Length: 389
Image 1: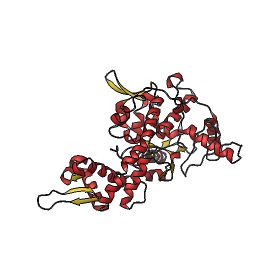
Image 2 (image 1 turned 45 degrees about the horizontal axis):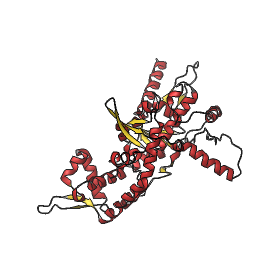
Image 3 (image 1 turned 120 degrees about the vertical axis):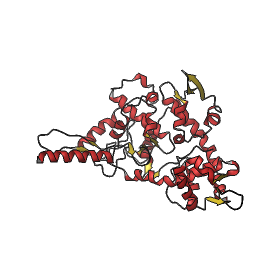
Image 4 (image 1 turned 135 degrees about the vertical axis):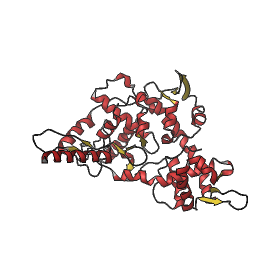
């Protein structure tokens, strides 16, 4: 009876852990009475915090976009519910009240209906968005070409490009402002009733991954420093042409056998993500490592080096992603991090972050930070919140 109670209690604990975190994997091992071993997905509280820090900036930037889309750039308060829904309306009303340095509320006297608009200081900074967009355009064109080059047939359904438009930083009118503007790079075709974005010209100079670029920079720095010996460090990092940057959570301590296996994996060659996936056997370890490189490159093409896992999985057929995507991501937890914070599960590229800060920011994110700074907030805005106009 006592043994049955213990087993029942253990099962209950395991179920609670699964509910608390989708990423806790418990493996029961039959070992003749020995304690069962657990494989735990270590949380990165700094990256979890990134999702919390983006909530207020998200509302600020979204309200700015709504106001700018209105006639005379003023939004009647009665129309706010139409734009964001009844529940969200109250969050935006709170933002207006909390940040009078950004949003000015007027009207309500006589026949004039209450409205909200940007303050003079906010309008002045908002005008800088056009310059940020111009600086961003060549980067967007390059990244969109690379996105197509990664795919099997150098084409991606247009609806899927739109799906990750915010992550890539595409403007809402990207079909007109980018695709039609650069016919030498892009075209749209309808295949079996579905619209596709096609790559017109392959450019071998673009077929270089962010991982390969990082290796080239680090090798140059190592040569300048006179360091020639290359070895696996205690954190699993290795300076080699086929190695990935490892950034484990603070609570993870790899043992000797783990590091030995990791060293073999880090040194293992694999085909470029820009080669056609049809050429490789799915079960080949080198092909599986190539899939990790594809995921790494896809996240590298986004503005904030992160993406909702469901959106990433939507590209399963175009990039031959694994059927058990989350399992693949959690297995390589030194490269990727999955958080349940926020409304949906999000995948981070670990090396792109230093604590809660994104290391390299594009012009759009820097503009967003500058605008949100009017609120007096010191936190990063993490501006994947809109398609800029």
